Image (tube, rainbow, N blue to C red; front, side):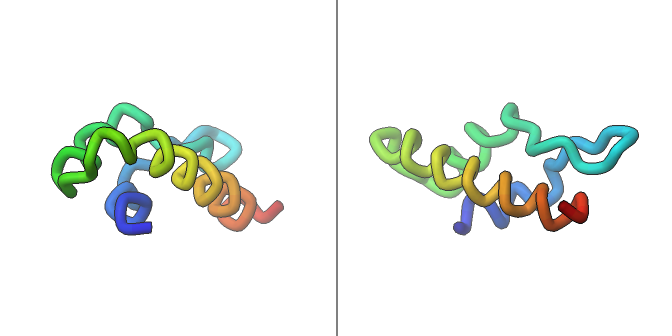
Length: 61
């Protein structure tokens, strides 16, 4: 959850609204928060789930 919160300024926005997170920012945040490499896959999976839910909310779906 903390990683997702730190990505709050990394949304890509298109003509029809929010498109998704800028995944290029994820490794930087993982490193800054000292997330162990063996946890990266699980954290990324959680980010994807939260991203999907957030997109539905932000885009009014």
